Image (cartoon, rainbow, N blue to C red; front, side, top):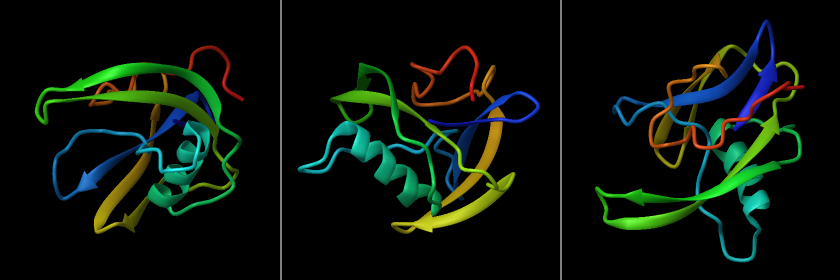
Length: 125
């Protein structure tokens, strides 16, 4: 989860275009030889097309059951501070997927896929 402090605390979210797979945050799998924190940083860079994010801060882990694909996943949640100068919206293409990024209020991000399981609380700096 990438956060920034503007007029209020905000969370970086995206939609896949043109499909409607819900509002999500940068995420992905852990590759062989990397830690979950390293995976969080890599996935954030790959999916956003941007660099300069803060070090991952561990928020927690939870088992997520994907009923559609009949599998269980262990999810690890991290907060990364946004670098200065990120735009309000942008598009990035990665692995043949178009990600349409935008900032949403951290207080009510309306995320899908249970990505709100460990939303950061308190003061975001």
